[in-house]
Image 1 (tube, rainbow, N blue to C red):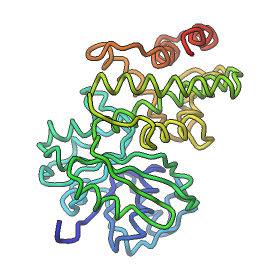
Image 2 (spheres, rainbow, N blue to C red; image 1 turned 135 degrees about the vertical axis):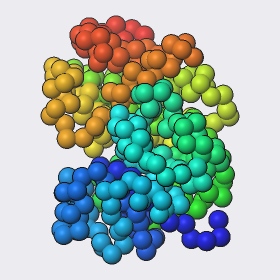
Image 3 (cartoon, rainbow, N blue to C red; image 1 turned 90 degrees about the vertical axis):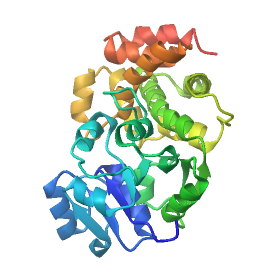
Length: 332
């Protein structure tokens, strides 16, 4: 860890754009891979992402932009992946350079649907990346508030605390406070699960439930999250820390939350397909819901009434009003 590490971000959505902004506060050069040639050319010419966080203006001399994933993967030492879980497998298949000696950072808020593995687990098994070289970024932190430079908090989790501290330092600024953790697996599960509970909160809002019910739903959600994570990965952790509870609350309550927005549309009567078409961003919780259901069935078999309710609505096409009426009797 003596020589300065070169950082690169993979993805061009709102969270990827926010992470590039954070890194640009501390680094002279940041690699940035994106599929779209148009997006790349627009940033070079207009100095901002045309589709996400367009108010953020970049100094392009800091950016090493490329549409070639192998060019950026070869160049950088720290590879931060911010590609939605539904699409990351296809992007990773393009990589033909050796990344086993790289530090891999997952800012992906979901599980690999093709394998059922956490993103970090996938890099370890498919690309031989050592576990001590795998890190996870968690909130509570919305990209839109990063763009506005509102005070936000991040948790960087890695089994190698020195690496976690180095990554955290390069993401820190006057408006970003960071802390580190060694609960890589637990936090990665929490990052996935909070999006499902945010969909539940959105459905409840769309159905007309008020703040009283929302508070009960969120308190039950954190307990359900704790049961799920403890079954999947037994470890001493404080579920009330910001990486777990804080991230859940901001995703469940904030108007910036795409998952809450998606759930709200479902509660108001949109079909899954129509809600997905209307949204400009991917609601990771949709894919996470199926992954969590499969994982629970195959491994933990714990009681997950909220996740089950969201699954029934999204994948079994059950009536949201009837499903939530039954769910209210299971909460306390």
